[in-house]
Figure 1 (spheres, rainbow, N blue to C red):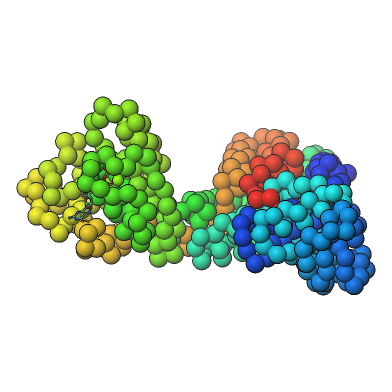
Figure 2 (figure 1 turned 90 degrees about the horizontal axis):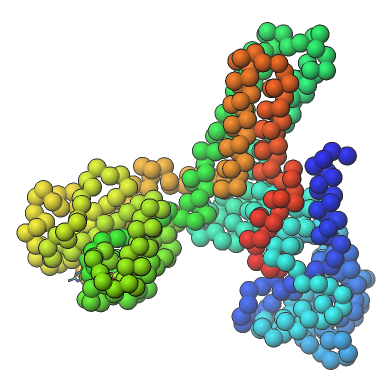
Length: 463
Ligand SMILES: Nc1nc2c(ncn2[C@@H]2O[C@H](COP(=O)(O)OP(=O)(O)OP(=O)(O)O)[C@@H](O)[C@H]2O)c(=O)[nH]1
Ligand SMILES: [Mg+2]
């Protein structure tokens, strides 16, 4: 058996033996809560706790049945709808039971308890999707798409997650893998039959093939920034002197009063983050503690946080009060593509400090009247587009994929260098094998145990 198949089988044996159960709907009150049970004994568990016209073991697959859930004795917990999804035609690929009970923390907890008493154990976060992966229902990129789907905040993020769930990224990766495998086969044949060697014309073809594989990897890698934006949003940090109107701007852009605004200098002491959707681009807006020399330890701590968030910003909004004197260390970085200078309070008279050349390139707005805000939003979007951060394509990789593909690209580069130096085919084979391994990691075809924890650990319980 190939090593990857052994690893897969091992991971499978370790985790899949038990029957697991969890509440799959979020905590809190709702009309309906869903409890899921998956594994070889899922239907037996349902038989023990369900009372209806028929036993769940006699249900046709995927059909809902009305009945009651009883606790250990004969006490009724709730009236429910129960469906059995028989293996392999279920989300996890195992026998899966879905119990829709009345929403409410206590009811669903009691139904779960009954499942546990009947022989299931509590599922870990992401364990249902992990089983779907281990049972070959989906590749790793599709499993990750499930998290993206749950977290999507814009239409495009949702479309991207849906396409990834349908396997579009997986398809591209498999194509690259197949091409690498075909190339390796040819090279390994030349190692096994050295007398035949690689003819010079074949060498040329191999080089072209490698270049085209390299290009395909590079194209996918170029989507990493857009992938980050789709999943996390563009980081836009509002900063400047105290009382400039930073918190007022955050509230304005959000459309509601999220942060306390007051004329006391140093009102905001911590960084506050909220997400807005600007023309379908997800933006992570950060309001920060105002910059000023302060003897107060707490305020200084806030200012350190401001500086940290500035280092991670995709775009900075440097805001100042045009009605007040220019702050001592105010720097107008007119040529900086990642910064927009904003002079707030345009409803008030302008302090002479802001006459030319200072304030020449600044955008004048009023958080009080709303004047200049549409123009500011336009500029934010145009800077994002210029930085190529505006997500256009629905196939966009995440950080884990990026790390794997970077390694694959490096291995391809080493293989290319080995070709150019006319090193023996063994060297080439080593590099291509490494590339193959790195590409395989994206879809979870190798080193299963290592990557599973990091991928599925991000899920909620019951998914
Ligand atoms: N006239 C006028 N007042 C404004 C405008 N924007 C904000 N203010 C007022 O300016 C004061 C400071 O606003 P904040 O939004 O709290 O300022 P900040 O930059 O967050 O201040 P710190 O958190 O202390 O750093 C408040 O009294 C606001 O009502 C504006 O456009 N025009
Ligand atoms: Mg503030």
